[in-house]
Length: 116
Image 1 (cartoon, one colour):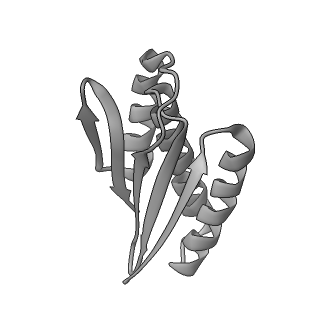
Image 2: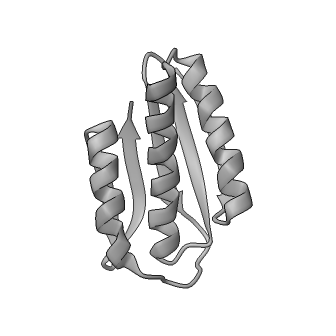
């Protein structure tokens, strides 16, 4: 099992780069096109949840093996946005990936973990 980590600002242009990177990792583990797209959506939604919870950057660690695991952790502080939208993102993550762990501190999400 190998690990691949990146730290990225939570802005639009970097989210596109993260999606492309995620797609490459999905190809490494043999995901088909639909599985890869679902996984990329889950990674993007996780980053958006952290952004809405007041982070300006995040660290992503992918575990590459028989499955593809992803841990997303909020890093630098930013402005907290409308976290009401988190319910939609959480529902989407649960529908696409199944079991998702949301770690909270002081009533905000700071870490999201899932595996596909």
